[in-house]
Length: 108
Length: 146
Figure 1 (cartoon, chains in turn purple, red):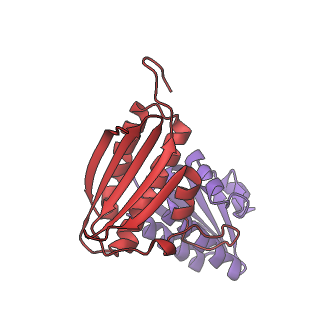
Figure 2 (figure 1 turned 120 degrees about the vertical axis):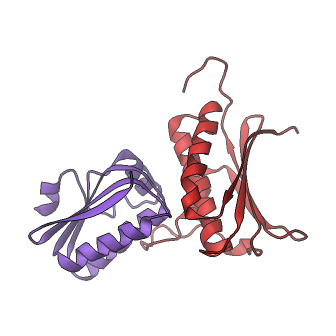
Figure 3 (figure 1 turned 180 degrees about the horizontal axis):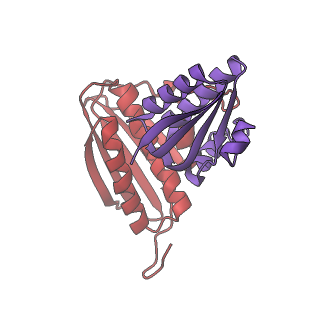
């Protein structure tokens, strides 16, 4: 089931994304990430339960990353699933995004 | 040269129809013996091509349909996406520089990196456009598992 939610932890916001991120709902992912960036100093996007992502989903992550960088905020991808990693590699973005394995590492 | 159809599908040009397209492609490519990595790349490429039709050819929200055909031509798989949208200028549809980090515009890169060849052409006499993409995928031998 597709789902995207925010969990606030002090100055840190955790965005959890689940399911198949495609054009049908990637705008919701985008808006959720931008909303998290509007309320927290640091944002992590947890992607371990994402079984598919397309270019519109990747665009939502890139926009979040660029938005954060522009405002001096921290932004990281957490526990990216293999399907996400494969598409990031294809887009040559695997070395652009800060990627960590745990929520604790994203908060540090 | 004979061309054996494997899959024929007509879907509404709506983002909500993409999941069904992916599922149908996964089943067809599994039957054709594509290994999982190749299958997933092909599904992504066709999905991105369909997204481009929905977002750009028809423009989001506009009603229309998309006909997807997958056929085998000896060792090659041939994917064809036919729409009925206004003609698209093929010269404007090309991969972008991936060294520039910006949101969007990745779909054609995914297609270009995955397929052995592809061609987009507007259909002059009929309305619409036809995208054909080819990829060498050896046929699965009888009893072989991927």
